[in-house]
Amino acid sequence: MTKRIIIVAVLILVVAVSGIMLWNRSHIDKETGQKELVLYCGAGIRPGASAVIEAFMAKNNIRIIPTYEGSGQSLGKISAGAGGDLFMPGSEFYVDKAIEKGLIGIETKKIVAYFIPVLLVQKGNPKAVQTLQDLKKSGIRVGIGDERSAAVGKATMDILKKNGIAYEDVAKNVVYKSGTVDELGVAIQMKTVDVVVLWDVNARHFNQHGDIIQIPPEQNVPSVIPIAVLKSTRHPDEAGKFTEFATSSEGKQIMADHGFTIHYPDKSGK
Image 1 (tube, rainbow, N blue to C red):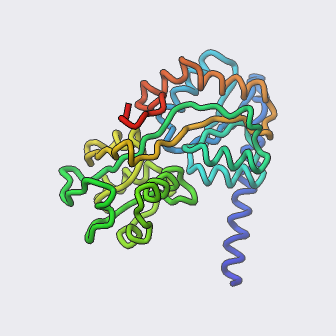
Image 2: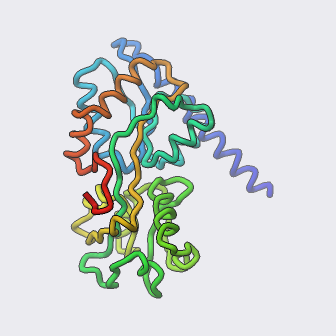
């Protein structure tokens, strides 16, 4: 019990210290007068988000400081009082939770793009994985996101539930749970798993090591990528300006250019 208390205390201290560091960064550069905004951003969004940030900063004297990590991890920091300005997780679940906690004004929530979950298997698909049901097959090593910290993990649980697949039937094959989505692709690359559930845009980064298997639209649960302004922001006008850019036609086109889906897919997958 004492050991557990010490571990919890250390974790709280780490969150507190990182929160102070972020809060100090979320201010104004003393040398240039440039306002700085901290953006809590889901790790899987990084390819598109970094390009959007670069385009925005090229047009505005505002610096965006992203923290690419698991969405649940970001929500934990925000809830612990870490401060910051913007929140762009891999699922609207996390923004909605922040709204419930009074950390975000619902009127600031906007949609940037969508994640489409897919299966990624080893190159050549040696275990012949074809459907979600195959995640239950004997001898299949499965990797999924940790639903407590990664948006893709929660999406995986939602997909299993939608298709009447009990997690207990899959759990016996789960050999790896990741904190972020890209770690699942790395697991395929390292050949420590046979199949993972991850976002389409991230899966394509590992096409040299694995093959993508689409989940039929009627079985899938696309994930909304939202963005919202935190009530802790010191620069609400500038934070609002970034959300407007990220959700503008220009911002969404940048996301599309980096492989993200910018229109909610219908049941035909379009």
